[in-house]
Each structure stands twice: as structure tokens, then as C-alpha cells.
Image 1 (cartoon, rainbow, N blue to C red):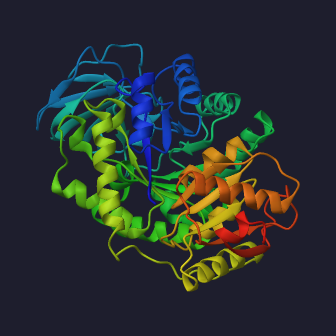
Image 2 (image 1 turned 180 degrees about the vertical axis):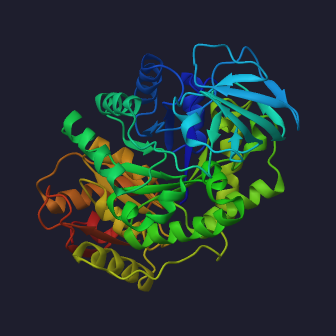
Amino acid sequence: MTKIVCTIGPSSDSVEMLKKMEKTGMNIARLNFSHGTHQEHETVFNRIRENCPNIAIAIDIAGPKIRIGKFKESVSLEIGEKVTITNDESIISTKNYFSVNYKDLYKEVKIGSPIFINDGLVKLEVLEIDGNLIKCVVRDGGIISTRKGVNVPDSNLTLHVPTKKDIIDIEKACELEADYLFISFVRDVEDIKKIKEIIKSSTSQYIPIIAKIEHIDAVKNIKSIMENCDGLMVARGDLGIEIGPEKVPVLQKQYIQMGMQLGKPVIVATQMLESMTIEPIPTRAEASDVAHAVFDGADAVMLSAETATGIHPVNVIRVMDQIIREAEKSELIFIPKCKAKNIEESIGKAAVDIAQNLSAKAIIALTRTGYSSQMVSKYRLRLPIFASTPEKRTLRRVQLYWGVKPIFHTYETDYDQLVYTCISSLINEGHLKDDDIVVLVGGSYLGIPRKTNTIQVFNTNEVLAGKH
């Protein structure tokens, strides 16, 4: 029911590995445009499309992420050491003198400001600002290396989405026909509107926007962001630095519940099985973390370094899948009390009620855009929801929706024939049996998107006998 997003990197970008990952449980492949070139990403993108055609591909747009510069090798900073930060990116950084990619950082930090590096593992304190140089002392030591992230939560930085690089990357994502855009460091609804304009000017096909919540401004503006994007990612690494790690679990629950109310997917991300980057088994805390995301009702959980650079990406997916399946056996998954606000939501709610009352074996959504299946998914019914669609793009996109399984059907103008085709194929594939009850939702006007207005209940035997 809960889906798995996997970041693709050097450990997982081969044809053999991608196929194994899909077979083990990967639903969405994430390409992180913070690293690598367009050519490198295009090669991997095409490899996934060719070898895993039903997997959704999400392109992660970096946003105004501050990063340290290039090091020859990793360095270890010790508590009490003095370091200097410059905006000269041409240098090769050293232990005590390194660069950042934000030219105006020296203008926007203050003496006493904390600067965090590498997801908060290293903490610096600003002692002095000397021209464009920021002189600091190490308060919490640790290892840093090329392009590790930088956070300055106490400073009101003027960075906004999209950056110049973001625009170029979004245009490339549109050219590749990505299934989703993950947008980093969204701060308000205006950021979302700007992204939509870039998409509109770059392609005739809309690409759904998943807003990554990792900035304190996004927390303040969450309602308007959620209403205007297509889904959320709870990006707990940077978010935890911005607001404090103790506040993240509550927000995670709140945002997942908001997503269910609106029928929009929510992904939980960052350090879910981090130790498995190098270890063969997770910590007990990590297993609990994944399980609680499932209990909260998240649509998907995400793996980052675990699959991008980890030693055994397939094993990580296997472990995550096992944790998800075990958690889903329990009665602890949050069931939302959602009010239907339109015809489509009312149809979804009614379909769920009918399926429960009749002990149906599945709900089938006949859909062009995936919207019908979204409106059923939001109620977290523990039955398979089959999104039957003639659109390859939709086939991939519904991979992100909780409990939804995509099935492909050819274009049909005869509604009865379409129902027969869907149900007979599900029986042939072992998803349904003779004499099963199924609930079907769709539109009375075939081919018109977002016009779900019909519920039907079928016995599979009657459909196959042509009595429906």
C-alpha cells in the first residue's frame, strides 16, 4: 500500500540493478539534479524508461541550497578549531578555508549566527565578518566534504525558488517528460506559481509538483502551499535544522493528514534507513521510523544515500518493503475522516463505503489522469485500488498514490467492453477470482478527465458471462 521512492546514483544506475530494485519494491526513481550533469541524468533517465517503463521518474530540483565547495578529500573539523568561509568558488577548499556557492552569505549572517553543515552534523558559530570572509569557530565537530549542504536558520536569507539553475533544470525535466518534479526549499505559494509558469512555457504536458517542506517559511505558509501544489515531501533533514528536530515528528503527522484531506500524496524522507548505507541491517530506531510513517498514513517513504551510494541498495529496498508490509498488517494506520467537497470526492467516499459493506475484493478506477484513484486512495481503505488507464503517463504517476496499482488498457469507446477487459485481465493476472465483488468508479463521459460521476458494483462471474 505504502510506496517506495529510491534515489538513483552510482550504486544503482546500472540496468541490472534498476531491474532488481523494481522487482524488490521500487515504485518511483528519483534523479537528484543537485549533482551530476544533464547528460549524465539523461542517460540514466532513458535507461530507466527503457528497462523499467512502469516506474515513475521524479526529478529533484535543487532550489537555493547553499553548499560548500570542492575538497580534494573529506576533512574532519574538531571542536574549537577556527575556519574561514569565502564566496570564491574557484579555490580548492581545505580544512580551515573553504568556499560556499552563495555569493552574498557574508552580507546576511550576523556575528553569533550558527552555521550548520552536512545535515546539521557540524555546527559553526560566526565570530567575525571581514569583507567577504566569514570567520567561525567549530562548536560541533565532524566530517565535511565536497558539496555538503549548509543551513543558516537564524538568518533571513533572500534566496528564493527558482534559481537560474533551477529554471534550466526544470526545462530539462520537461524535455525529458519527467513524471514528477520535487522542488526544494519552497517558501511560499509564489514559488509554486513561478514553477508552474516555467512548466507551462516549456511543455504542453503538465508535470505534477511535489513541494519539499524544509524551510521555516514553508511551515508558516503550509496551507496555501498544499492547496496549490500536487503533493508534499516532508524533507526532515533541512527541516529539522530550520525548526529543531523535536518539532519534526508532529509536523510529519500533520502534513500527512492534510494530504489525506486534500487527496494529495505526501512523501516522508531523509535518513529513514541511513545506517544501511554501509550496514546490512537497520537500527531498531530506523525500523520504527519507517513503521511510524506507515502508521501515520504516508503515501510513500524515500531512500536517499541508501540506494544512491550505499553498498547494497537492493537489500535496503527489501528491508524497507518488509517493514512496510509488517506495519500494514496492524490496525494502527491512521484512517482519515474526510469530508467530500465535490462530486469526485463524494464518489470516492461512496465507493469506499460500498466496498466495505459488500466485502468487495477491489476497487477499479477507470481514469485518464489518475484523479479518480486519488479520490479513493485518500480514504486509506485496505483493498487494492486498480487504476485502469490508457495513458502511459498516468500509469506511472499513480505509482505514488497509497494503495493504487496501475493497469493498462487500450482506448475503448464501448464502456461495457472496457469493464470486461479490465476485470478479465485482473482475473488472468491473479488479482481477482471467480465470484468476487468489485466496485468500479469512472465517468459516464469516456475520455473526459476529472469527470468521475459513476459507481457500479459487479460480480466477476456476471461480467465474464456478459450479464452486466
